[in-house]
Image 1 (cartoon, rainbow, N blue to C red):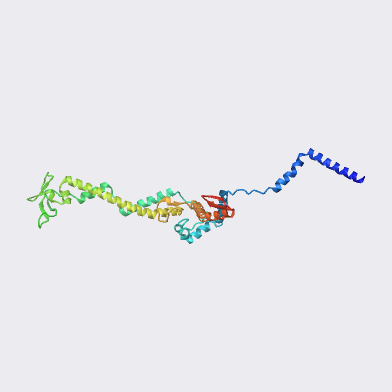
Image 2: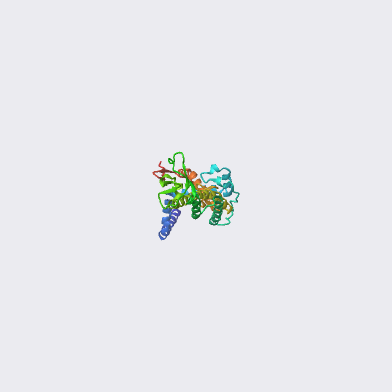
Length: 313
């Protein structure tokens, strides 16, 4: 009798359980969900090379920034040749600047150059004493002054004429001829005279010779002036730029304390920005390839056919 009662109670419990399972579908799926989640293996996500590269670059940048720009510049100035891949720090050796808070220039670069140019022009005038074309014409008139008529003169003959007497002496006669002159009892053809004597004896040739002389002197003077201008600019421009608070833009090839070109000068704060960018770029060039390779290999990737791919078994 007792066994019968126990059996009936067990059947009743089973029926009640079936009833509740039928009424609650979520209970039916919970076990299967549990089995699926426990039996499925986790899937690995792919590696993004661009993201890895950014992480590596951030790591390099942090290392670069550990050295302040002021200490970096001081170290580079102490060993300028070691840092030539960044800039030519030799050009900063004469400067004592707080690179953490670099001072602002006292005037614009253009204003400094204009003031220096005025000094240059004054220096050239004091050195060369340049003349105008009219002043050179006056010099030509003196150099090729016409011989006075009806007075005794002594003129030279052209080479190869006159035998042992290279000069002719006598009263210079009045003449309207454009080809010959009379001196004493002699008549001398123009072709027998050197050019400078022709210029002193014939009015047309005189005017041409004076003008030629004046213009030639202007060309020579201009060439000499240009040479002296360049010399003075090389001297005074850099001095003016430095006095105004500018420094050579050492990131550019050719920048130096002797370069008078304003394009090679820059305010200290802007130079600091350029140096920060340049030193970071140099660090990337040196470190990024090898660190990127190491980072990707550690993630199971190799570089093949110009791209990173998972390393096969």
